[in-house]
Amino acid sequence: MASSCTKYELCCNECGKSYGNRPLSACPDCLAPLEVQYDLESVRGRFTRESVTAGPASIWRYKELLPIPEGFQPDLPVGFTPLVRAKNLGKRIGADNLYVKNDAVCFPTLSFKDRVVSVALANAQAFGFTTVGCSSTGNLANSTAAQAARLGLKACILVPADLEAAKVLNTQVYGARLVRIDGNYDHVNRLCTLIADEYNWGFVNVNLRPYYAEGSKTVGYEIAEQLGWRLPDNIVCPMAGGSLIRKIRKAFKDLIALGLVEPKEVRFFGAQATGCSPIAHAVKNGLDYIEPQRPNTIARSLAIGNPADGPAAAKMIQETGGWAEDVSDVELVSGIQELAEDEGIFTETAGGVTTAVTARLYSQGRIGRDDLTVVCITGNGLKTTDALEGCFAAERAVKPKLTAFDEYIRVVDGQLIGADADLTLAGGAR
Ligand SMILES: *Cc1c(COP(=O)(O)O)cnc(C)c1O
Ligand SMILES: [Zn+2]
Image (tube, rainbow, N blue to C red; front, side):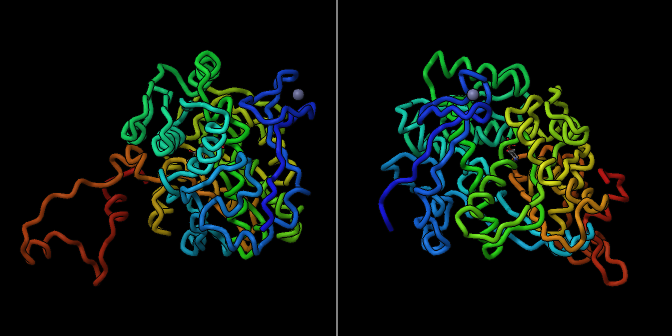
């Protein structure tokens, strides 16, 4: 393999001005977000199906199309999560060709945020930051804390005060300094912008945001490769800031441009919780701007009321012929249970949203029964067990005797009655 490096730099999405490579997230002239652009010609010939397949079983197999500084030696096996056929869930919702991309088991902290953090921290080190941080709705906090610990960087992490206990603990355990802010994510994010400047810290989703966001492309590269180098008909993706969904499309465009897959227009479908659905609202109403919302949902990892990439995400969804939907907290809890019962995958609230939205899109006929659809499950259910509180009966202890067991267990016509049947009887969440 040739040793020459991929050429990339920051460019403004609005005016097209380029800014080289530095910790900067918005164009000083028009305040639009900056995005990493690549000289694809410098990659051609070095990024092929063969070169990728020969690479490590992690996101670093796509490193030629990631903004990583010269000399960076990746050593954490982040990403390359399973893509699994979802026959049972498909049967339930009327989908014959359904797949789940399972980032609930992403290494090292069980969400897709591990991808973005590893790319951001590679750049943080190159820019000379010794303290890093983030504003987070939870998963980003976990991943930044874990990866900073391993790299020997100090971490200061700011979260809204109402964050789930498991996500707080999963940040503190790595030795990071966690600051709970009495406000919502949008307050936290604004404060982080000021702190990054004042203290000269590298905030992965603030001043390092353009590099961070590129890590999400690896979800798209993996889906295409795992489908045997072809693109699906549809992607269903949760949206918080609106970055992941856009970057999956960018990844597909890269693969088409470099000839690794046949050209195809993939339709993108966005998923949000009704209690915080500014992007879905824009799509449903054909707006080209975002009306900020005050979040009120248990899907805290998606609770961004004024999403940085919201306008671009809404526009992109409309361009591809896709759609966006939002579901209630009750529906998202059912979504968590259905994915678990059907496919053995325990996802967090965001995944419950995505699963419930997928079912709705099929029932609305917006996605056809035979379409090849990939559902992006982005986080792990063990981090949001509070969402299922009260859903399952507390079992009493049974004496270790067969007669006691016989008496206790309910078998009807030789069939074991499952927990879900008990739930209905007990008048639980469903
Ligand atoms: C952050 C997050 C998202 C959304 O990511 P954006 O790129 O901000 O839209 C989706 N799911 C989970 C679990 C997340 O933590
Ligand atoms: Zn500009």
